[in-house]
Amino acid sequence: MVTGVPFHGQIHVGDIFEQREFLSAPVEDLTGDRTRPNLKIQDGCNNRCAFCIIPFVRGRSRCAEADQVVVQVRRLSAHHREVVLSGINLGRWGREPGSRMRLADLVRRLLNETPIERLRLSSVEPMDFSDDLLRLIADSPRMARHVHAPLQSGSDTVLRRMHRKYGPRHYADRILKARQWIPDAAIGADVMAGFPGETDEEFEESRRFIERMPFTYLHVFTYSVRPGTPAAGLPGQVAMPVRRERNRILRELAAAKNLDFRQSMLGRTLSAVTLERGSNALTCNFLNVELARPRPASSLGDVEIGAVTASGLREAAPALFRVLA
Ligand code: SF4
Image 1 (spheres, rainbow, N blue to C red):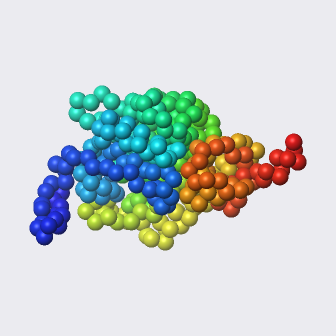
Image 2: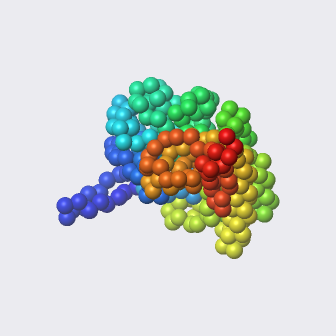
C-alpha cells in the first residue's frame, strides 16, 4: 500500500508494509478520562481479516522495546494507579523475528520491575490468550480482572469467510478457561452483525453461541463496507434493515448479560480506581460505580456494591454501614 504524507510542503511516498519503526506516547483513554492512561506498545497487524482496512493503513505488526515499556510504565506509575496496555493487535507483542518474548513475559516484567498498582490489557485476539497470560491475570492482584477477546461471529462458516484464525470451538476453549480461572472477571468481545453472506441460520448459530458464552459485555457493530477490503467485493451483501435488526438482537442479549453480571456483584467488595471527576470509579472487573461520596481522582480503594443502576453500580451508602455495625 502506498501512502502520501504531506511534510514541509512536500509529499513523501512510502510503502506502509515496510514501516518498521515504532512510535508511542501515552494517551488518555477513549472517554477522555486522564486517570487511566493508555500506553500503546504495539502497532500494525499481519492478519488480513476480510472486513478490516487496518493492515493497509497501519502496516505490519511492530512492537515497543520491552525496556522502553518498563521505563514508560515506571514513569506513569508516579502519577497514575492504573495503566492500560494497548495495541492494534496487542497479543502479537514480542512476536518479531528472532524474539522469544511474549506478551505474558512483558506483563511479568512490568509487575516485577515497576510499582504500577493496576495493569489492564485492552483487546487481545482470542488465540493470544495463552494459559500463561490467563494465569497471570488470575493470580496477580495487580492485574485488572478483565479479558477482552474479539469474536466477530459465533458461526464457523462466517468466521472462515472473515478469514479469522479460529473457530467457535477454539474461542470457547479460551473464554471458558478465563471464566473458570477468574470467576469474577469482566469478559467482553466485539461482534459484528450482517457480514456479507450471513444467512438467518448463521446468525442464529452465532447468537446461540454468544448466549452460551460467559460474556459480561459486548461491543456490537453493524457490518459496513470498507472500500479496498476483500469483504467489500463479496456477494450476498445483507440488506441494511436486516443488519440493524441483528444488531438490535445482539445488543439486547448483551444488555441482559451485563445486567446479570452487575447483579451478581451486589454486596461484593471490589477494588476500583476513581475516575477524573472523583464521583465514579472503575472496578478491576470493568464496572462503573457511582461513589457514595466523592474521592480524589486516581485513587485506588475498595468499594462495597450496594445497588445496581441503569448502566452501572452504586456504592453502598456509608450510613448503611453504620446501621449494620
Ligand atoms: S480485525 Fe484486528 S486482527 Fe483482523 S486484520 Fe484487523 S486489526 Fe488485524
